[in-house]
Image (tube, rainbow, N blue to C red; front, side, top):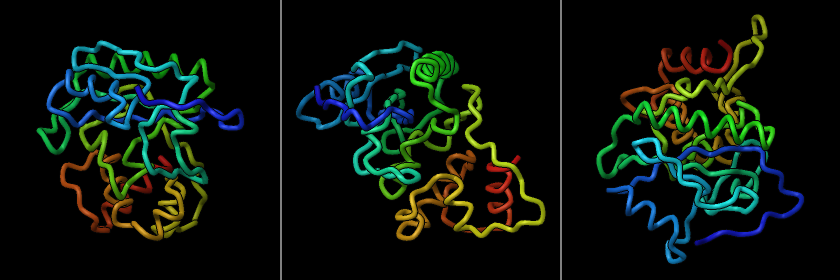
Length: 214
């Protein structure tokens, strides 16, 4: 299995939610444990709600790849990775099961308590690598696990540009400047849009604002 030691100055503060994106649970499990895959995760949750603890969170798993969030680079250094069994966009993306949500909620509450992680730091793979990743995708409803990521106070009369909203959401400035369209698509997945494009309609801007401030 692929993993690294965590450096003492790299404190765990994020949980990154993924989907497996493979044809079966068995294939996903084997890949996450194979040294030849160059990937790994701390936890895997099957569609029947079984939680597999693949790696102790005190070690660094290789689940995020090239990634940035807020002012941090290489999010593997700061995070715990959770994989949800789902075939994903390539092999037949489907709704996550209710029992998956229940297991994920229990697991995240456990992690939050033990690592003092805030709701705002429960994030998606598509957030930290919007130019490369789509998971967990538009069919993942974070409210089903009781997480409210955004609690910004509304500033009266202030109008925010799209750039400012994307930065408030948490995207690293590098992604906003170089991959703005990918960032927009990632936000639409968080909003659970059924059709994911990079268009900037008035409805999208209103929905985005309400996601952050309401």
